[in-house]
Amino acid sequence: MKNQKIYLICFMMVMLFPLTSFSQIALQPIEQLDHLQKNQNRFVMIFIHTDWCKYCQAMKNITFKDKEIVELLNQNFWFIDFNAEEKKSITFNGQTFKFRPTGINTGIHEFTEQFAKLNDEVTYPSIYILNPNYEIIFQCNQFLSANDLKLLLLNLLKLA
Image 1 (cartoon, rainbow, N blue to C red):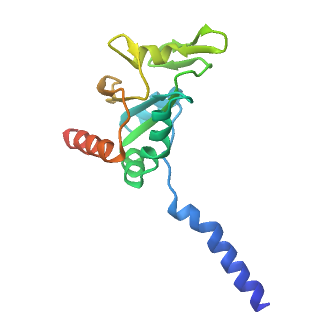
Image 2: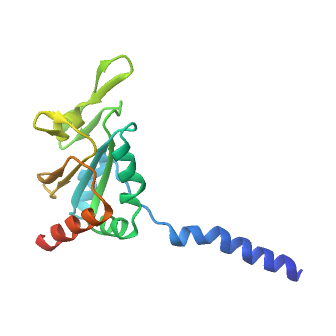
Image 3: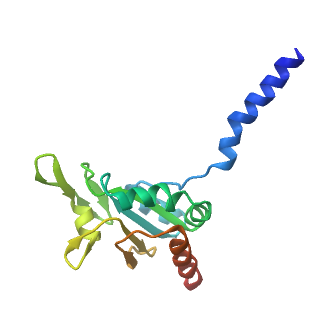
């Protein structure tokens, strides 16, 4: 009986430990932004990426896994994770955006074309920060390390 209690305690510790040490960014559906902003005005960060972009994947797996980044984003921003090749239509800020095929099994989402263009080119990864009125106040079309993103977010929050 005593051994069973010890095993049970060890099992619970092993199962609960990952929950206490691992945090992740709260992803918000873009269609819910209006409702979320009504409840609490926040900046919006839109991360536009593709599955095949190695820099996008590095940001997902390194930058956005950093504990300080997770805390800053979850406390102060609505975070939108958007795949540039998403096939479903979305409505954002009163406008509907659709997937636009560009070839066999390839294409780009109109939302990506609207937001991720810099000098008439779409590049990945793309990060956009919008104010609560959905006006772009920052855009970056390149990989950002956790340190660089943290500095950016802290400076932005100081100005708010």
